[in-house]
Image (cartoon, rainbow, N blue to C red; front, side, top):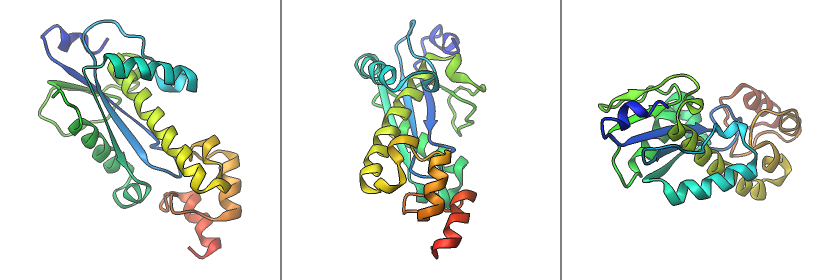
Length: 197
């Protein structure tokens, strides 16, 4: 576990991860989680079913020392670009922690910080704190996308969650973008050419 070096020194570690970075619509959601030292059951959210994520989230919220969520809207992603919007959302998540971490572990996200930082690729496979953050970010974003589905039912956000699936691209081509689409992403920009937006 990536945290062990920090835990052995008595440091509190926040794992940070995001969901929605590559989506064509909806927000980018980042989460930060501080776990107590020890073994934890959390795994990369992409390898879990929706039901498994919900069950693990219940455990996470009951046992984590602290957790926080930060959001960058589709408009903010367009304005700042994906990387800066990710940093902004991660900063918001960290600011919402009720326990200040002494060190950070992220999934290849090099945050500006004076704390010790580990940021290897695929950190969610090596760090229960990052895996927990990935679960929290994914569940929160999926819930947001369900809300957007109710507002814009023709786009099918409940199913594809804003990612560039064939179904989403077909609906985008037919309907043009809605206010929750990221206008600077190529498929959305191309669809916008045809509907006058």
